[in-house]
Length: 317
Image 1 (spheres, rainbow, N blue to C red):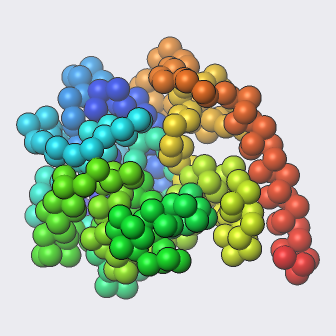
Image 2 (cartoon, one colour):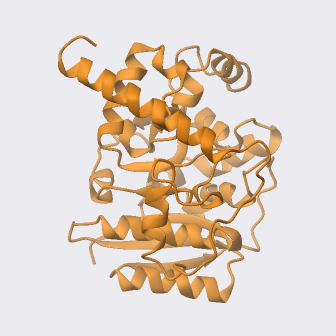
């Protein structure tokens, strides 16, 4: 069977969001190849596992659960980053040897385009494809921090690990996972396994179009991105047709009531899952968080996006 292989990692708390991410891919999939989801199962309850399976199979997808409770990756965690985030490092050893390529997605996102386009994107001999992280690259302080901790040269690209195309054959051949795990278990990296991945694959990753991982420093168009002419143009272009909306960071879409500007797409896809009746919102650590603040930021981002988009079309940008 010709398949597109997708990997998601979840514990019991993120089971609902895993279903939302999966159904968003299934509903936007027009290609004839079947979507086969491998869920790295870090203690998902039998009931929630059943709901994920029902969500996927109802849309003619395939799902395989891979229990990982017995596997340990002892590394630094903080804030919203859970142990499950490190499970992506185990993908090459957990999946069958016959699987030589996967699309990896975090579970705090929705996909708005056909993943077949991402699957077919050329890696040009690189072991991984990912999207540049504008939150890191637009910050002089963060660039210095990555130079000091990772040895990443000033101005060199740094990727966000929430969406990756992974050449598993290459990862296995060079034992890349073991090298990343060694890095993250010997350092308290600020950005966890993402830092380890950037260190191991430094200069050896394919840069995917920005629209395939639109994170808050893109969809909110902060000043640090607006000041950089190249990033500004790329961000505005990505926002015209985002393929992935990724709520990376502290603000999660399920923590707030439905908002047209902030989390409408999450609620829309939630309604298509077996978790549709779940009580919402589901607040977590809400210290310092405000939906109104987010809505104002996104309103300003829409203003700048329209203005800069029209200027670019007229040749003034």
